[in-house]
Image (cartoon, rainbow, N blue to C red; front, side, top):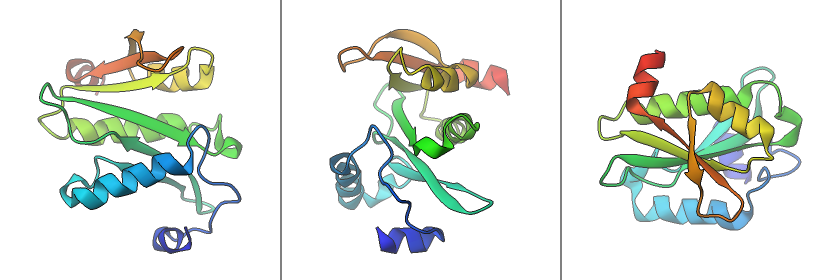
Length: 152
């Protein structure tokens, strides 16, 4: 962890990764990027607060857009940074990045209904509930390109 924190210009946080992630998830993303270096941007992004500079969380797409133009986004912040607008800003930036690629037609994100703050982050960014997720108890949200472009 020291190496990439130094590359980001931050001190390693007291706890990492932010919940609900675990080391296995981060190892999966690292291995996927190692297998496909052209996928930079379609895997893990780190969230760094500017002042005072600190690593506060991360987000990731689960890879390149599928043939229908869908990508899936996940995000997580360390608990001390919840409720300060960082999640909303992180999701806004990454959906903008995704839609800067003409092949992306839709961004999906899964969360749990009881994670009210996560639901709010998605709703503030224009995502709409579209059904159940593959994980039991989770729900899926989507943001279509037309909605994204209409909000700009």
